[in-house]
Length: 231
Length: 231
DNA sequence: TCGTGTGAAGACGTTCACAGCT
DNA sequence: AGCTGTGAACGTCTTCACACGA
Image (tube, rainbow over all chains, first blue to last red; front, side, top):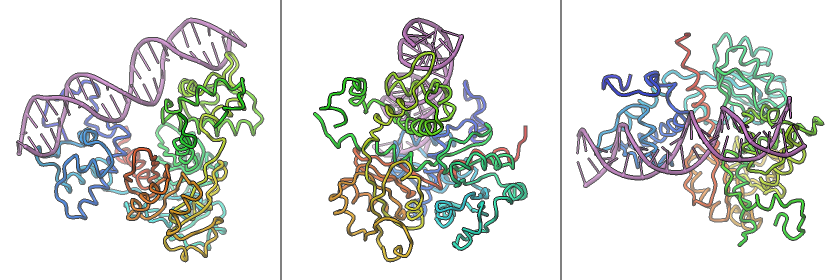
């Protein structure tokens, strides 16, 4: 779609590059989302063009890396000038498949789950959580969560009926694998997992783990070393 | 500070390791935390020894990778048998510097911040959030958050007085950089950042970003591809 | 025999540096 | 001039495969 008409490009290794998605490194995808967000802010500020170095700085990466990442998207830059902010944003948006947004469900409406529902971050980036599920919905009812809440029994049929492919998983660690199995069986293909558990899923299913305690622990490793400041 | 003046002979291995903290890859550190957690579960189940392949499976990594990671910790395995669960766990714990835990503060007690405070995950892994701060504490007061809550004005002095090095940042995106600057000036060296913002900090400060919308977006990329093709 | 520890190889990701376009 | 796009160099992480010890 992007680089075919230039013709005889030597695609020695992965001839599949036209089928873009398979060819773009996972880390690049992640950063593309970041660039997308930065470009949006630039648009809000009325900027029309931006250079790789300026955008890179906004995203916290090196300019060379940004250009490398964008090379997976296509050639949008004007040499000597930079990129058209809006054009580039749309191109990234297309590559990321953000034109038609996926509906999302949330499973496990405990403390964290409810907070995520109220947290505007997902909506602001265009995701809509269309329903929440909990094993004991009565306990959650009194909280104002702003989306329909169902008993977990309804989970499977809801997923099938609404063709849900994305789920946020906030159940206790002990239940996580079990619930994940249900999700996968019903057709969910992506799970954002907040449980401190290593989920076992089929290869075609993607799991992104958000492990809060692990992040903290990781941070603390890089801190405590100068508590003693030897030498 | 760890094991110097008491001069235990049996800990000779560790002394070397202690010096090379800088030499362990970041990704390995992350996985070591994961192994640590898995080993803890094994202990609870009464297991005394474990092979690299079994532990690797529990952690969701390849056995070869696990062994490579552990080689940064030292030689604890018994060929033909495996590892002593408890011994290995202690060794990892030591490398990670988990013997003396860092106190943590939380800044920005909105929806997400409050949920994190109530969420038991940090405590369960040994971290203690000793205080929370908010620009408008009155709005939060009525919620039961279980830790002392202060006005953000008190932030700097509190950090200095309590020698806080770790902070969880949950303020709105617009405020994030500003608050981060304060934290760094007061002596914080590690920030767990939940704001969808690229923080600019000095090199000696570590920032771990937990960007929820970005994770979802990333997931959705790997989903929508077979909405149309079934080959 | 079994399973660790590790050199070597490979895969992957990043950065350099410059050709080439505006 | 200024800036992109990219081959090539470089560095990092992962996996293989096997020597060696229990």
